[in-house]
Image (cartoon, rainbow, N blue to C red):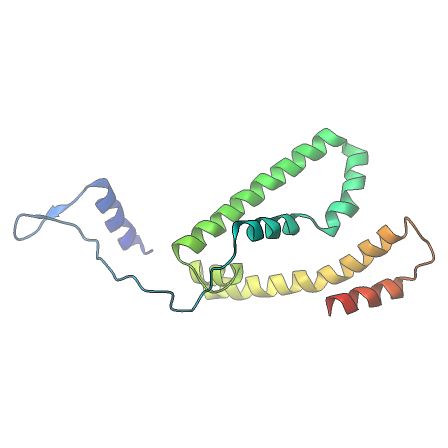
Length: 170
């Protein structure tokens, strides 16, 4: 929304208006047309599916690998406080993304939202950032899986774990 449009909207909402030629109250808000879903965005996820996606996104390898050291050093109270703070920050981010998606839906994820709401350059950067994150996640998963498997058996070679993870990701 431009600054001029923002001022017009604020004037409309706050009741500031001016009289037109006929002596009636005239607002500077232009009424537009509503359009159907022009990019064929499908909305078929149920509440249960969305909850399972959210739970799956919050449980990761880092939770199982990192939580042991933090629990040993800081104790359960501070671990609970840190997880609660992290959860609140993630809830706010998810709420912001939900608000943006409801106000102006786009047929894509957060990369398209960044390009739509801020600038196409930010969308481009967010896309590459997400690609690099996912590309570097695979070596982390290999290392974490080998570390976790090392608690039970020491004879599992790292190359075997690497091949298994690459085949499962591929």
